[in-house]
Every structure is written in C-alpha cells, then in structure tokens.
Image 1 (cartoon, helix red, strand yellow):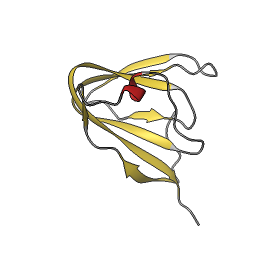
Image 2: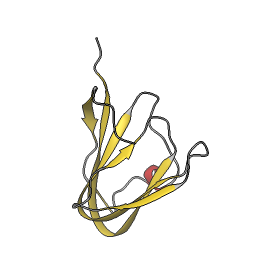
Image 3: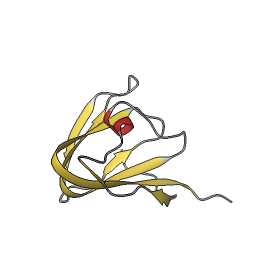
Length: 97
C-alpha cells in the first residue's frame, strides 16, 4: 500500500548492517498507530515480511534497486538480512498543527 501524500518524515534510524540490526527488528513488531515508515536498503538484500493476522502475508526482498519497503501503521512485520546488508528506516507521520 502506498503511503498517504500528506505524511512527512520526522525521524530515521542509524544505518544498520547484518551484524548491528536490533534483534527486535528480526521478529514481529509494529510501528505506532498513525506512524508510517520506509525501509531504505543501501547495499545488499533485506527480506521484508508482513505477518500481521489482519493482513494477507506478504514477503519481498528489498535491494538498493527496489523501491523502499512501506510499513503501514500498527501492522506486524519483520526483516531478515540476506548476507551483508546496509539499511535504515525512515519514520513518517502527518504534520502536527
């Protein structure tokens, strides 16, 4: 699902590698309600898996050549490095008035 056009980036993680990726990202977790995110792969390959019981299971392999992985608010997902990888996550939300 594409991100809404009215969300804006507000924070991003450091660049993770296959050895520095937080363990929490390797198992089912979610963003907060109303927070979208993009997974940007800079080098290598990263499996992005949506495994939320309210959604159809979805798995894709992200690379520097593919569009960023879109994380919907409050949807369970996880990542899995496929060998050497460098990536970061950019968080988005609607502008605060």
